[in-house]
Amino acid sequence: MTAAVNTTRATTSSIAALAGTGAAAAAAASAATMAVAAAGHAAGISLDLGGAPIPVTGFGMLTAVFSMLGVVIAAALSRFARRPRGTFLRTTVALTVLSLVPDAVAVAEPATKALLMLTHLVAAAIVIPAVARRLHA
Image (cartoon, rainbow, N blue to C red):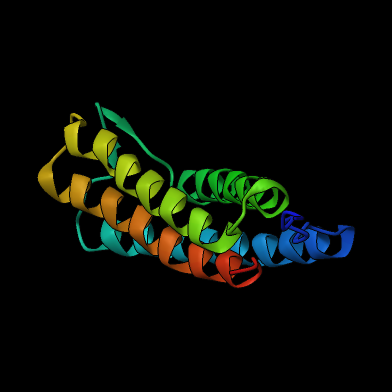
């Protein structure tokens, strides 16, 4: 009797495609979070967190960094997970929920906290589906 072996392994070209899609999604998410932050600030919502202002460009930079971290996670899962897409979706949704915790407990106005949480959700809504589409089910 022979055992079935999982032959679904990431190839160099699939990792390159994943990285390209991830970079494009990260750029789109960065622009979107900066736009959300700028719109919120223009509407009168403070971007001060713990007494220090968060620059609008800071939203884009952190979005890009953490989005690319998500791409690294996706690449690892595409190599080692039996079902990379499902594992990626469960992992990133859990990480998105966890990313809301610091905003919820931050020393900031309620509107500021809500705006910060919104930027996390906007970024996740852009990056997670784009990257997940590149992974095997």
